[in-house]
Figure 1: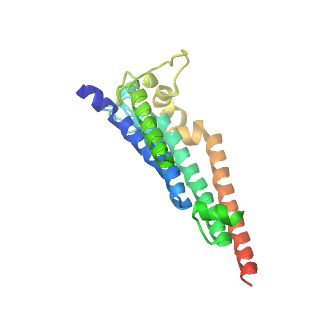
Figure 2: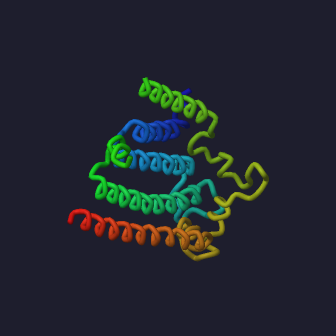
Figure 3: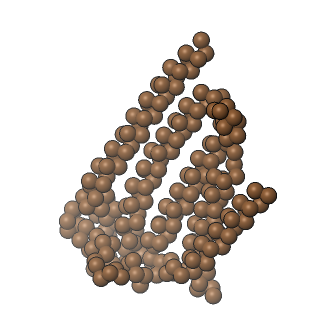
Length: 122
Length: 106
């Protein structure tokens, strides 16, 4: 039982983080807070992939002369780290575009509240 | 009523996800399938290949750098195009809204 919990608590943490992000998207009326919920969801996905790439007792993915490369269990899995690096960079770029669009909406309508925006657009 | 339904759906979603996560392999287990030599389809997994051959292929000690810059360099190039496009769109939208805001203020 203790083994099960120590092997899975990282996944539960990312799932709870995902639900916090979904809460922000579903319940908050302010568009900035909705965007922040989206960012929290993205962070949870990144943390999930980094958690799944780990190995107990392994070192970072930099070649160490004292550890031969044939012992692959001594190094972390480098592929999820690489892909998450890409995902983080692209996520920050799209977040910038989202905030720019929010600025445009605020300059045009003077509000970021969802309900007020629907009324003003009609 | 609407809010209670949403909260119920959210809690149900969390419960289903946590139940599904109990089937995942243990975190950090070196015998995990994704750390093995071959995948379920009996194709080679890139993780071990990268660890064993990265230094021989690119003469860089950092394996993540080798994958990002050498094995997947075209992907990184596309990522840079995404960043450039995002910056360009930011610039264009901000310029347009500034012009619109000034004309509506007058």
